[in-house]
Length: 352
Image (cartoon, rainbow, N blue to C red; front, side, top):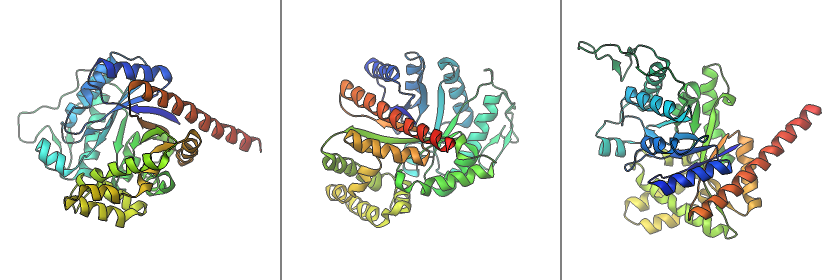
């Protein structure tokens, strides 16, 4: 089980932090994209200032760029980074896509499938000719030609941020990995069963996929305060990251046993009662979707992620650089110990 980091990159200090995280043993850095900074430009900046850490977008929004533009950017980053780039994709949601990008939020499953297929065709060096439900390349009855990328072929690992059952199955079938938000390891089958079913359709297993879970990390003795603070932070996700009728995070929490709770939070938020909404978020959501507490408590949580088969933890760290690096070093050490337990157990089972 590897440890990566989530990072906002706005200048040299942030790049220096990522370089120090690389020195400590962080395996990957993941840059988000919402309606501020894009994900790909900071990764190019980091590519020039690091040497071994993998560089992932978490996530580049589908629909914000054409599939060919995504392929061009991914291949450029792969070339400039020496093959360290990971293309993390996600559908975002109708509020962002239609309100910010001016792109209709339509057929998200088809857009995901077709984008993956087009990016891979371009990256392989194929001449681009594609007839899908959403994308037709070249456009029919026009002057467009089926072109081939001018860059050399490159492997572009594609990870999908998926929450719903059908998108999870599509991810298991097509993608190289999964980015799993709103993930409670005690409820891992809610997500992994669908990933497994999709993988089986493609004749493979989950062991062929990288499973990346974002988690806030905080070493503290005041566990209840930290859990409450992180739970309150979910009020925006539950109340604003979607509409009353459609919120992918709420649906995911509902499938994990919190349907009534997230409905109450959503209703309070939409009524303008935001402090009450934050107070209404179950403490368990803050505690069980993150790594909070003493080293022993966090090690116990790490065992749950390990046993679920999670391959990479995307650590979200807070505080000044020194505090974040100390927490990262401690987390990497604990993850190594917990992974070592599994290896030792496996060796004993083989001997038995």
